[in-house]
Length: 481
Image (tube, rainbow, N blue to C red; front, side, top):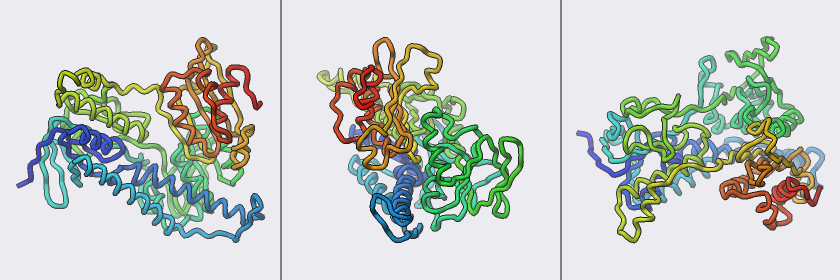
């Protein structure tokens, strides 16, 4: 007979949204069960996405630096020609993932969250059966938080398997392929394509749109395309991939010509889709918004006390969005389920009123160079005459030049309301600009105006000075240009 568990909160999915919700529920004293049926604690991001990909990207950049030093020297430094043992690199990456997995497990244990490893299947909105290695467990809960995440989109004519890979398999290869074709010119394909080019692979990119990273404006993506062209990456824009057979990928070019691209490996990165199949979502009675679970601004679904967070709920499909949603849902549930004494009732009421309504969710592409976007960009304000736009080049920043980050066309751009100077958006492209993303998001979230940014004494020498100077330029008095 299956084991029976009753709990206050049941969380399905241990990714960035699910495990954060679990920790916060535990901190707030809620009896909580977390079912991990996917990639492991930390989900896609920690196990097969954000963290491992950035580790491989970092290793590739280190390799490229040594390779430059071996090819005539750089910055007065010379070195012997480097070699890469990708299996060792992957083992190092796996060590980082394991350390973080253990950290998440320890945090959940500290918060007294019961973690069950297995695949859940719902029979109704509040009851599921989890198949574990030790047998079935039936769990019923008062509140359910759905955090099942997303998975790579598979093309019907390029099924995953063998030499056709998703990003998951690409991050586990034990050798650098001689030739790699990336299908999809979005951020995942470009990040990994650039990394493998740095490691010595011959790389080609096939993208249906007329340019790379089509969700970003051309000024942001041009430096990335220039890097690709300079480093011999073959670009096929406005092109369609076809079948893969005998080491060759069929591609229809922009002008309709059919060509064959040699490929030891094909990496398909045409997007991700919410993980809605195989766990009984159809039995829960929740409303959908296209392929996503429909939620309101509290992350509540159409079914009472069923909540959803993260990639399952729609774009942007970013880990930090899921984590923020998970935290808010935990606090809303706690405020409802644990009546406060009169002295704390105001705080409890405020928690129940919490809404997921951020001013911005900043996004970063860890390409070469990196791209950051927060808030509105030029494409969002096209045709408006009530917006000030100002750009400051990284080439005019001392720190950028001193770390070879100012010569690739990088810049920081601000958009602000012409009437009251309130910041509407901030973007940047350049080496290491990912570290500016939190400053951009913070200023937008706090409702800063240009004068606020201009009035902050930015540390010298740092890349952040470009944010300061861009704001000064929007006000008409930049110092260093």
